[in-house]
Image: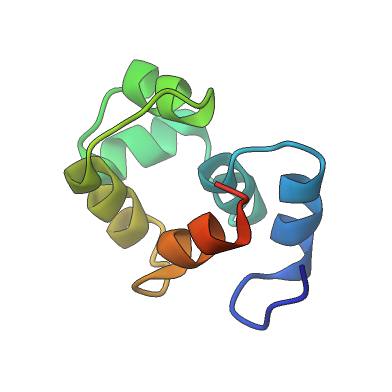
Length: 83
C-alpha cells in the first residue's frame, strides 16, 4: 500500500485495522476532543465514524479540513480499500 500522499505511519495503522480518520488524527497528534472542537462534530460522532459507522460526505469534508488533509485523500484511501 505504498503511496506518497498517505504517510507511512498512517498506512501502517490502517493495515492493522485502524480507521483512516483515527490513523490520521493520531498521527497528527489530535485527540477526539480536539477534532470535535475544530470540526464542529461531537466527540461521540467522531467515535462512531472511527468505529466504522457510515457518515455523510459533509462530515468527511469537515474532518478533512480540520486535520488539514489534502483534498481527496480519504477517497484515495477508499480506492485502496482502507477506509
